[in-house]
Length: 292
Image 1: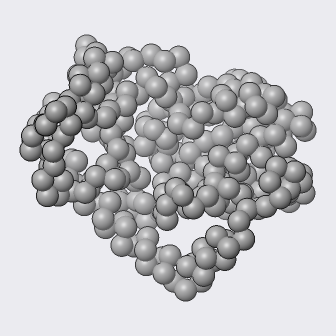
Image 2: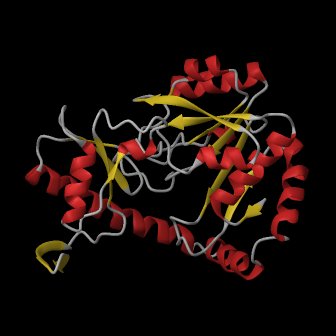
C-alpha cells in the first residue's frame, strides 16, 4: 500500500488494529515520532517499553500483555542501537506465541556506515510484521510518499482506511519515483549520499574529539544523528539552554523519554544537513556566521 509518508502509514495500521480490538500498543522508550498521540487518535493506549544497548527489552514487552509493538530495529530512534540477533529471535517468538503484530519502522536502514544494511524483520516473519518506510530521508521530506507491506489478512482493511482518508497518494509523484528506481538512479543516489553523510559524520566525531573529549559518543552506525552522553551530574536542560543562547540547536534525550527525565544527561546531535566544511568563525547580532 502506497501512503503519504511513514506517519500516515502508521496511523492507518494502528486504526485498523484498534478496530480489530487491539487497543494497547507498545512503543520503544525513548522514542521519536509522537507515538502516544498516534495511539490516542486510534482510540488506543500507548505503553512504553525500555530500550537498552541491545534494543527493545523483549521480556519487559511480554510483561505488558500487549499484542502490538511499534519499533525501529535497524537504527533505534533516537538511541541508535541495532536490535541484537537474540532479541530479534525472541521478539519473533513473542509474536508467534501471543498472536501479536510487529509494526516495523525501517528507520535509517539505507544509511549504514559500519556494515551492510541490516535485514528487515518483515522478511523473517511476513505473517506477523507490518513493514513501513518512506523516501523522506532518502530523497526529500517534501516528497510525501511511503509504503506499507503487511500480512495479507490486513491488506483489504488498510486499503479501505486509505481510500476513506484521501482517495490515494499523488499519482505523478509515484510515477516519478518509480522511474527513478527502475532506471537505477535511485541506487546511485543512495551510494553517493552515503559518502556525503559519512563525511559529515566524521566531521562531527573529529570536532567532538577536539573540543569535548570527555563525552561519550554513540549511535553513529547509521542515519543522520548521534547521541552524546554527558558527564554524570551535568544538567541536560542547562546545556541545551546555554547552546540556544549561542544560536546552536541541541535536543535533550529527555524530550524522547516517556517520563521526561533528564537523567542520565544525554544530547541528540543531528549532522545530516550541516556540510562538513562549515565552521562557525564568529557570532554577529546573536546569529552565527559561517565559513567554508
